[in-house]
Image (cartoon, rainbow over all chains, first blue to last red; front, side, top):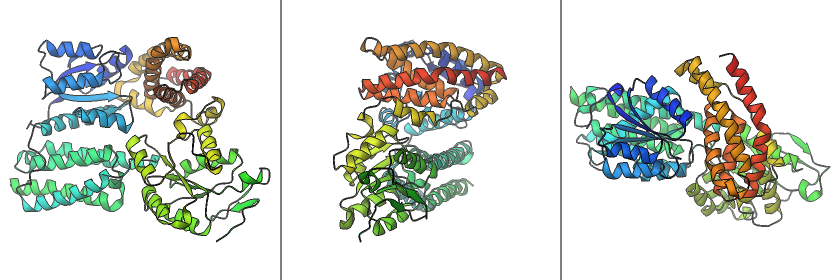
Length: 248
Length: 285
């Protein structure tokens, strides 16, 4: 597993974007986050060519809609040949069907334009964590701590039920989903920056967070029901606390 | 329980709507709108009232079922995600109640999701619409269902004259400054002002490609242009333009070229005012 927090400024970033204004806006954004090792590709094919030269890329930030070889084609190629490269799709395609299609191809993060700097920072960090988890232990494995195993089981039951439900349908839901997502993401990012996350339980707790954030994003709005939300939030806090107890 | 719905229908919140100017069949149509978001509810109420219907509303699934027990309805527009009983719960309760077999339920969802739509249809809904519901779609689907016809394959395939869609579109603000303000905070005013200038130039070209793309020869270029304009308009808070671009993009995806053409004409009409409001804001940066 990678070490967190990752220093964003040290990342080698490949930007794939066919529109010159969008490219400049994206470059300004990643620059404002302190990333300076940036390679620009004016399309999917150019991005693939850059990777082919043996360029040591950590993170691809790609548009989806590009002529000929689009972002999804690029994602498939990256997953096939550069498994440990983190792939963040940044797109105007906002439907759940699109998000599911990208997930099915192994995308690590999905950010809908337009985005604020904070949203981009969070998306990059989560995508990096997602990739590190993608390389880590399988999720089915039971945590080696009975208390955490019990917490994880109850959270997973709630997630399974929520995954069946619909996504946000009103403006209020969107706001609540956004707030909950931001809170869970912030807690996850803080946890991955702590020494506890490196302990034997850390990967389980990170994956629990990721799965909650994921379920929230892919619909699963039963998470917004008060009881479920409390269970998730309190359960994750408890899980984080259990890691600290184990570490000390 | 039988009710006589001639002339007026007093909803449970005590609000009375007069419908004497409309033909009896329209006035007597019993339509229930269920949504916990008052703005979403009002949009549909307004659209139906414009056609002469007198819908009543419920702000929760529980309230809807209580109303249905007292006042059987012909047609229900049902929001999915509500506190308490969800739309799915309401669908299940309707399906399980033999007294409600004549009730047609149209699910209205904030997300466009084919899997979810299939689930709703399987649970007994007759159709699935995504918000915001277009005025012409609402009109056609209501007329079809009340006449006992199957809906014309939902919102996506309803014909559009451009005028009807204009009513809903015109309700959207031309420009919402929050997005640009956030960009200024993130990147500084000068950078954002430069982006806006470049976007204005680019948008003029995209507008041309979209309007020309109504004809089949240049459609491929128009498909790309409309996606690009949607993104740019969203980036700079041009809400109305972004909504029109999104509608055109969806019409292209669905192969509804007549709709795309009408919407492109609408985009053309709203374009100058949109860009002008952005320019006015940018002048002060």
